[in-house]
Length: 198
Image (cartoon, rainbow, N blue to C red; front, side, top):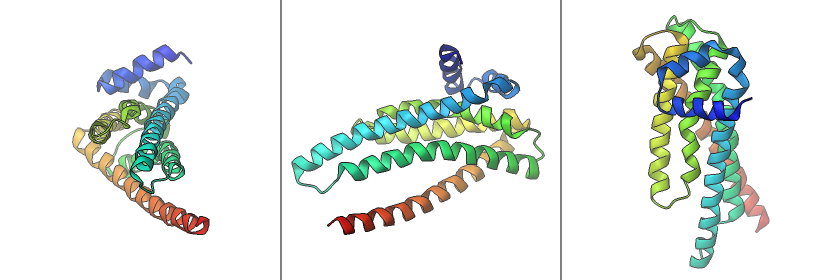
């Protein structure tokens, strides 16, 4: 895998270059590279969250707050793992919705490649630790990735932007709800572990 070519393609994807999405759709040799783009996004999100956790833990200790580094670290790991799982779920879900309900034409691999590159804007999540700016940046990056995902879906499924928007939003909402459910279950479990530790 050519790392420089992957970074170049990732930057083109982040610039919402439609020709890039058509190139990766047609090139089955880029399957692993698209996954690598997602893994880099997950690792950079983890790094940003970890740095933020360190800051929160240090500042929380100085202020006498009960924020624990371990809890924040576990949350950062969850975000990184969920990023990769979400990629697979979103890819297959959009393929299913797009082909079954909107007459799109694509193989699952075509969506995995294009959607994988749509995660490139999430590389900026490494900056989430910056106070005040990090939260705003996270929202901007999420919207940016969603727009990139819409372009990726439209190009892979070969249909119009309206159908791509509906397909992307349905898939994104399903992933969001699943994430909330898992976070809720995970949060209750962590509270139980915290109670046992006291």
